[in-house]
Length: 377
Image (cartoon, rainbow, N blue to C red; front, top):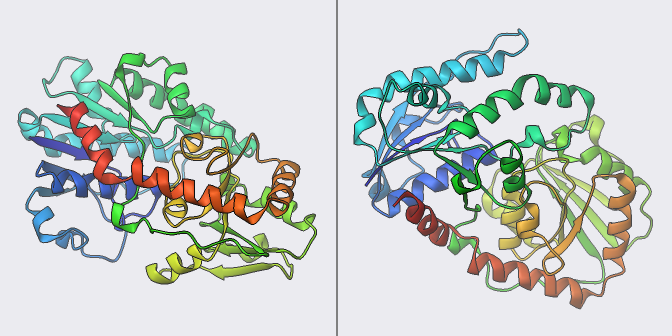
C-alpha cells in the first residue's frame, strides 16, 4: 500500500498540534510498513533531509518531498493566497505520482488545488481525504477581529474543500457536528481521534495531597482563554492550591499571587513530564480547540482535566475524567476551580485513574492507526 501524506509541516520541523498529529500519523503508518510520500516543509534549524526523529526502519517507508511554504506579504488575506499557492506547488510536485497512490491524505489547505483539479475532471487519482484540525473558524471567537477573519477569509474555502473531498476526517465530538453543519454528507465523515504513544502512558497516578496543584501548559494565544483564567484566579481565595503556568507567557499577561508560579518554557521532555505528573488538574479554558495534545498528554500522565466543551474535548473530558464547562467565562472558571478545591482527594484520584484507563484502552497510536488503515482499505 502507498499513501500520499500532504501536510502543512510535521513536528518538530514545524511546531503545532496539527504538526505533532502529522508526525505520529506518518510514524505509525511507516511502522505498519505502509509506503508514504510525505510532503512537508521546514520552519526550524533542524536538517529536514535527515528525518532524524524517525527510526531507521521507519525511514525505509518514508519518501520525503519538500515543498516550501510561500513567503508572506503584509497585505490582508496573504495566508489564504499563500495557502492556495502552496497547494498548487504541491500538485505540480506530485502530479506525476498520482497513479501510484492508494489514498491521499491532506492536512488543512494543502490539497486545495488537487481537489480542484479532480472535481474539474482534469485528473484521475485515488480518494482524497482532508483533515482540518478543529474547524476553529466555525467555533466561538474570543474577539471581533478574530471573528471577522474567520467569516471573511477562512470559512468559504474550508467549506468548499470539505464538501468536495472524498473523505473528511474528524476528531469527533462537536467537530463532527460542525462538519455536518457546513454541508458535508455524513457518509463521507471518518471519525478518528488523536492519541499518544502507548509507552508514554504511566502505570500509576500520584495521589492528590491537601494542596491542589493546577496546571496551564502552552504558549499565549488569545483563543486559549488565559485572560479569562487570569480574572478567575485574581478573585479565587484560599491557600490550599498552587497554580502553575508552563510556557512562554508574555510578562503583560502574567498576574501576581503567592499561589501562582510561572515556570517559563520547558524544552527538556523529562523535566516537563516530571512537572506535569506533580500536578493534579490541567486547566484548558479555550474558546476553540481541535483535540488538544496537552489534554492527551496530561491524561496519559495521570492528571485530571478542567476544560471547556469545545471541539473534541468532550471526547476526552467528562465527569469520570474531570470537569467540562460550557464557556470560558471567568466566573464559570472560578466557580469550577472552587468546586475542585472542595472535592475530596479520593474523588480527584478516581478521575486521574479513569484518565489513564481510557488512554490505555482507546487513545493511543497503536490502536488509532489500525482504525485509519481500515478506512483506507
